[in-house]
Length: 253
Image (cartoon, helix red, strand yellow):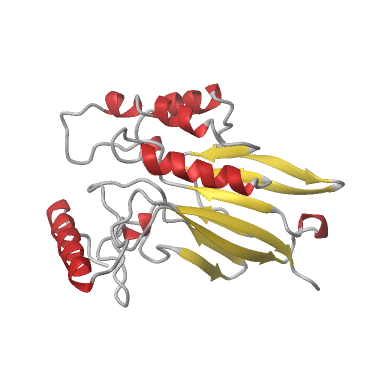
């Protein structure tokens, strides 16, 4: 997938919007309308007691008052209606400025506090990890903001999740790790524009092979959430913000 410049990305987005209007595709431009994706994932090593364990993934918030606050709040309302066993937040709470160099990183990172405040509305147990934008700014401040609202951040750490005498491990790892059963990722945004039969005209580096959905890589199950917020342009076309409900299943021997 070629790496498009911001201008080309915006041109592509405009062309897709025009095409959607011509085709009369209702709801094609949908950055403020998150939707629920429900999947079941069987895991060979999952204890029987965890069969039916329900976890929600939210990702790529890129908090900004005017654009992402609304879909974040709507996504939280969906999460709370589901009452999952666990919610995981897979990073990019802020956006590092890519084009407006006059905007200081410190000003951008200040957005982590209102983002954390909104995310504090998630009911039930939850954990967070940092994304690449978070790590490239002031990660300590972002971790502090999340911890202040009782959202633990896993950074090269793991925590046990227990049911009766059984236990699984939830880990937040900065680098690739072998031997895990399930990896939950974000980063791609699904390209923000998704053209049926073609795919995304633009995808960020490191997100082009598995841009969305469920993939099996050897013994690893990978799920890529297309996120809630946006970067470069505040639009989503045929690529609605996503709340993922994952039900784990113990694979019968």
